[in-house]
Length: 468
Image (tube, rainbow, N blue to C red; front, side, top):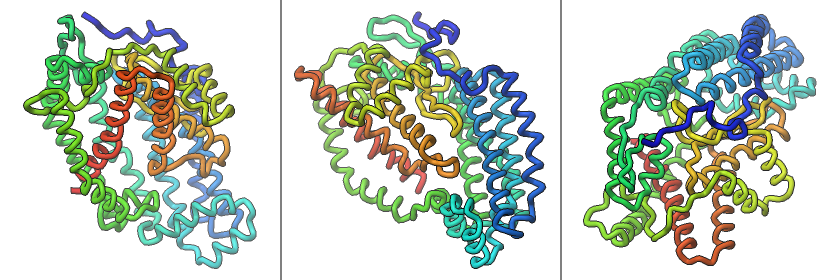
């Protein structure tokens, strides 16, 4: 039976370089203890920021100084945990980092109410007289926009202190999803028993053998179904958490609360759902075409991912994917390509699936670290596109952190997917330009069409579900 390689069997060049953050766990522990002892430095400044522009600047700089270090601690611990979600040592380190974040948030809760208590003319004078405050101009503007939603220092402190409890529903589901679920074995196209994993599920659900993709689909979802009561409880707890914070911050809905962080009107969200819903007939046309081409009497969920054109299951090694992605992204310029190649040599990427590793893929890191990418590479075209996608995020992060100060060294989720989907588009264009094989070109176009279905219709379906 095919099984996953253990982590210590993976060559080091295919693992991410978390040692670039902390060389040892002991070094992490030392810095954790140091930061923990420094939190009173910010606490001691409560009630002082109205004294002068310099006093306000001192508070903001101290908050950022501590936050920057905390991000480094958290990123290391959480990514170590993602390497093996069953590892209790890293679970504990990540939990402690969250606890420290809650402590810092609780201590810093006085800052926004005290700023909002300043008369506008006094705040304007502080900014004019204190050059360093100009850097915080956009943050102060955004804070003023939320004036009706910031509570007193005492209430904000209590709300911040509840942060660890608020993380519980998501943490519980993450452990169920990545550590506790034991997927069954299924038989592949050759009849050989294979251990089903989150990674190879992406292969089997695209199998041209309907029995294989049905077995994979039912194997995954029946396993989740066994945990339906626990999962339903965690979802209910998350909804209650969102409603609690929405109410406490005087928003009319959880959607408004979530979107306000990015200064996005609810009408934008509603317009997205409405516009996509109006074009569902296009999706239905595509699904009818899929059903006809596959010669099926009924189209099931496990039939939605199999290619609708004949294609060989092309093996694409990680090295091939790297080279292809680099060539595809050449239009972005030499500077971009140099940074991209640095990502490979500096070991930004944790490439292969291993037991207990978090499923899926993401780009992460902190302002003071290099970008990092978690992959579960499967030697196929989909994984190559995922690599291009996540590199888009990581290059976006790299340039943002290197060309913006810490205060603006991040970007919102509202724009995050622009860089990643651009890379996918460039990869599609490159593959179409470099092959004249009709079957392969059809396969690439089919992949692009599926990406459109997943990115636009599927994601909006999730949005509508949450809306209702």
